[in-house]
Figure 1 (spheres, helix red, strand yellow):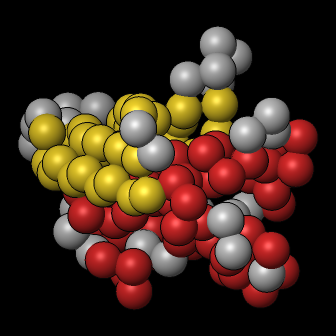
Figure 2: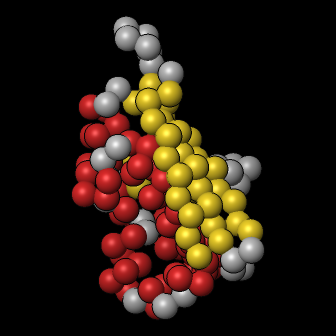
Amino acid sequence: MILGIGTDMVRIARLERPLTRPHFMQRVFTPEEREILRCSADPIQWAAGRWAAKEAVAKAMGCGLAGCPLEDVAILPDAKGAPRVNLQGKARAHLQRMGGVRVWVSIAHEAGMALAVAVVEGCPDGEM
């Protein structure tokens, strides 16, 4: 059952300057994400996609960034490289309160833009 859908789009170039600020990096990206970003062939594009994905997750969960801080939402690659959402802290608690069991995300890049769509999956009452 779908509990929420969110989307976000960002100009890739918008992240160029903030990525040079350590405080921004720590506030937005988890240690695992920062390591992947450091090794990325195109770090600005990678960061823009993850930024859009985190915003899309907050919108899909209906909690905004106050209830779903960016550092509580990790967008990490699975074994095949597809983005997967890993929630911690406030974000995880909010997902559980809303009856969610998983958040799906898709990221695309085109013409200097990064786009992400997030879907919150829940279980019908009584099923797990």
